[in-house]
Length: 426
Image: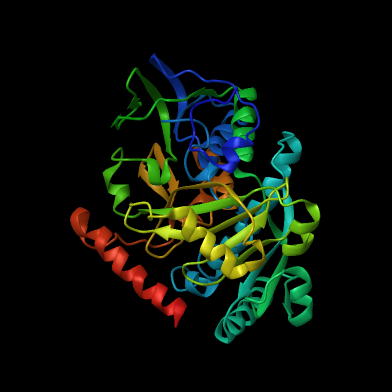
């Protein structure tokens, strides 16, 4: 039985069984209240429970309802922007440590999947691909920077016939192959974290949106039918947090992102599109990304909305983008098309911090959160337990408010992203 109603997607259609968890009713006391049942919240709850804390997790819909259960499922080392951009925001030594933490985040996924026996189709191998000569040069610069500045080895630039042998398309000039990154079924990974957290003693309540917050000691979080009193609070709702903490909304914006899934193609036809089960993403600002599912479908993402309005003719638009990469799929049916929101920051780096000495948050992963969200959960557990050094590396990244205030910030964002889209096309 699946927990709470979720958006119809390939992931929800292939979700592992999960219990129906009740909404919170009445008052409960605990050491830590976690708001948000995505990867950040479930990982934080799991790590805190393993440290001996009494943890309550409340989720407004069902576990994995937000970006954690709807994304492209690609786990990639690093961040949504290149490391030279991060070096503009933090000291060079901090940038090196943050890079190392992003690599650790992938190792953490591997360890959790193995230790908790999470069936989530985890696979390794990822490639960033260039459409234009300029982008090929950018890939070479990224490889050189990661090797020389961060000691990240194993990256390979693949071109020509070798690239054609891996990808059944003529669209790309070059690809930067990373054997250390990969992909998974994001909803099943999130459900597995929630199950592991419950096994460790976490009390999980679904259909329990946080409607009000009273700061202090204890902090009190109210839901429609109850309230949680806690020594510490973790805010992990991302783009779905609403107005619970208004000062955080100024630092992030919701962006709609969309994916389509084909009918099953069969092993041979799917393998002719993408060999070696790679995850692939181009490096446009408004990018296309794709991979194969365990049952040999093509999962293709490539449409975003900065206006909070879903694009018209979404399935047809995604089909057009998919056929620009793989025209040989013109006869293939699309079985699922879905979307959801991710939270972005102005600089596209994660936003971690404290609202008070006992309220912590982590969000703003900017579409690059499969690995980093799980790391965020661990670092939040560390800081609550009194080990703040690694959490504070992220907290020191400088972030600005989105300009324009509540009335104008969305139109300004739409205009800014139109400029980047034009840059992709020219």
